[in-house]
Image (cartoon, rainbow, N blue to C red; front, side, top):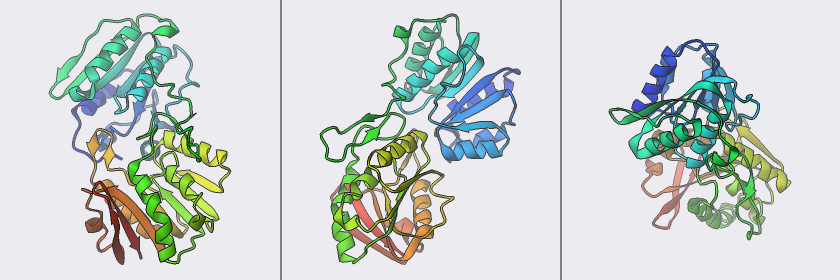
Length: 357
């Protein structure tokens, strides 16, 4: 969950939620959500949808009507909502997807409450939303934040909907590869092979041989669409692995990872969780390319969170292999947590660090 400093765009949205009269409303919640959501008392007429497992779970426990999914609003009837609340996301296809869904789901006269910061493209998104809803273009400035309250005036033809890169559809992103992989928008790096993960895979076979480790269980911690698992599973040095576990906090990543393990018929379990918080089984091998961005912000606490999870789940004699950008002080954060910390490789952009209990 976001632990960043107060976000004026999110605070504006909270104020609108507090003053919204009783109606059938939808609140779209993603990683650009601060802990200040807890200041708002849950109400029965506002339904929360989130693509982040931790947020959906926490808000549900706090009493909100909360659902976790990849903003799949196909079950929401057309012209059924009085209001939609949305602090814009980092990824353009997701923003376009949710603006399109707001147009479809809002009643005539329904309102879209939209906010963001100037350098995030909010003014352009607000203009596109106004054109889609058939109302006047208008944004208000509150310090660093911009906001708009837009009223749906009528229906548009399908051809005027915003390009969302076919948001809901899984597609093969590497058709020339010997290991074809499915992915979709809505997750970081959804349409590419991460260079850090490539670096890890290059060194994994030699590491397992040198440590004489024949793992039978492996966790892909923060799995994304499953790139590490699917490629590692093809390595001879990983042939001993009988059970693969993949976990992520992001709904689009989980959909993609599940599709990939099904396609490749891998004996794997894909689990939605907050940094594997609910996993208990000790593991022989943990592979991790941890995120260091949370929405629009760099989030330094995430690395420590992933390290603590790896230490808790790693068997004695097992290995955790992390790949991080060179500027991430992973060794410092792991000191006092793991018994052994070893820099395995450094290519000037990424470094590989091996941890053991």
